[in-house]
Length: 262
Image (tube, rainbow, N blue to C red; front, top):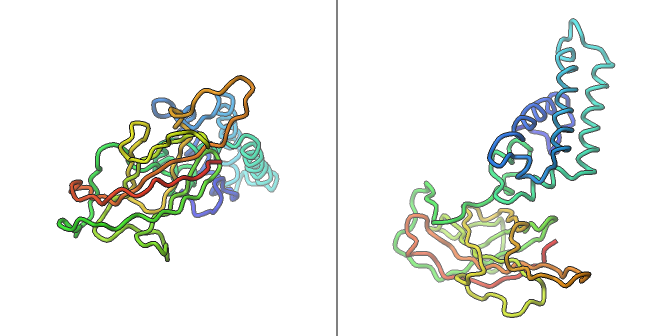
């Protein structure tokens, strides 16, 4: 949405685009976006109040011949500062990043890197990639790096070689990275070893470098005794290279791999 490096733009022009796009967007979708993001009604109201206050001042700011004054510029900058402070306290942008099934449009509107958007899940999606190898069944594995991030997110970087050199990349001839994962408590017995285990969730990514949100994956977390400390959560995950148009030629499953969650 903007070329600024921060989620909340610091410039008046950048912030104008940001607040005028995100505010109405929060009230779209089913369920509404602000609910999907884990925001409260009070936080939505605060965000809407920011836009109202902004719209009272911004027209005068852009009217350089008529209404512009230094005071108006300072007032606009104070709104930006208030937004940043409110987000720091309430972690609203962080909640957006941690949202399960985050879309590309969500990322665009909130200046979030595209790697946070959720990979496609379900049946093999069809990706428009030319020149895919239709005959070779690979025995090459997936060599992943699992980097835990806040709020149960895992940054996944997949490589086609054990050396894991260079940038993450898919194996030549394959347009998908297929994965099967589950979230468990550290120390749980009988953890899955197969991708087909009924406790696992299947997913696909057309990218070899993406962020997987696990915050809603609670099915395998057993009930704890009253007053007991919550154990560390871990992700158990397997990978294989896959072909969107030729699933019978998918590679072999690799893993399981595990990583603690933050």
